[in-house]
Length: 138
Image (cartoon, rainbow, N blue to C red):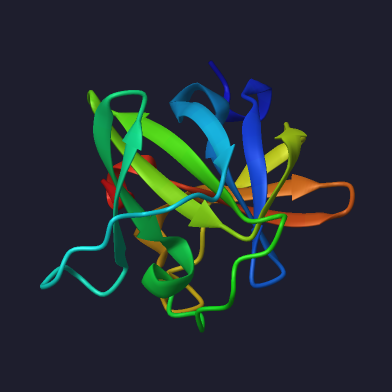
């Protein structure tokens, strides 16, 4: 299947637009209590009980070197699945299901992140969206 025919879950982080492939997204929930553990990587917020399954949750803000902010009513956890592993990803807000007329290769660096973190850059009528490789997060 062509990347341009794929659908994505578009979300916001630090007023920038990002997306995951829709088939990698298991579900999206409002933020809830996360059990923290000491001695984890700085971007690991802890774990959450997702219907009986303990799932790690990361802060995409922290991973992408953005400053942490207080959660809002728009904050969501997107649960993504890759190679039978599930991880929760905290984002500022989920925007929409999107598809892109064109997907271009990412530059060598996108902000603080290597270009290899991204599948590509989706071109939408209202701007650009960085498409994240789930395998790079899990």
